[in-house]
Image 1 (cartoon, rainbow, N blue to C red):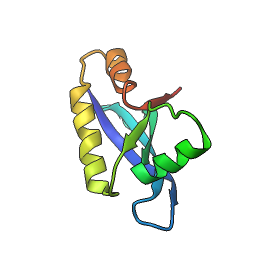
Image 2: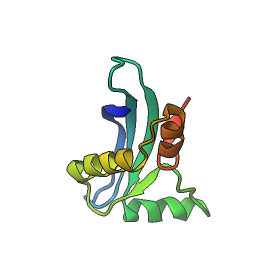
Image 3: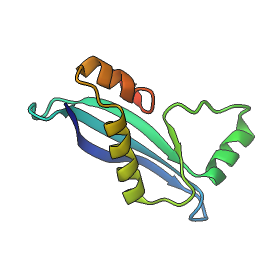
Image 4: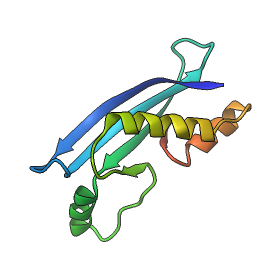
Length: 108
């Protein structure tokens, strides 16, 4: 079974307002009984305001690996990631990783 080894804020960009943000995270997951070994996933947290400004410079933004959040709250992010981990559980490691890849970008 997989567990979260680390959830790390990788990059953040804040606008002038508190509701204008873009934050990238790295999610390391691995088996409980295997210290150090993990698979790396990434996702980006973006506010509706930032998403709107991103769409002004491009016609389309692909949503895979994006979480949209109105107010930045690290506890909500942690809870959401844990809920996704529980939802994606599978006894087969490859299936578990594949399930997580529906939500996060897998870094091979």
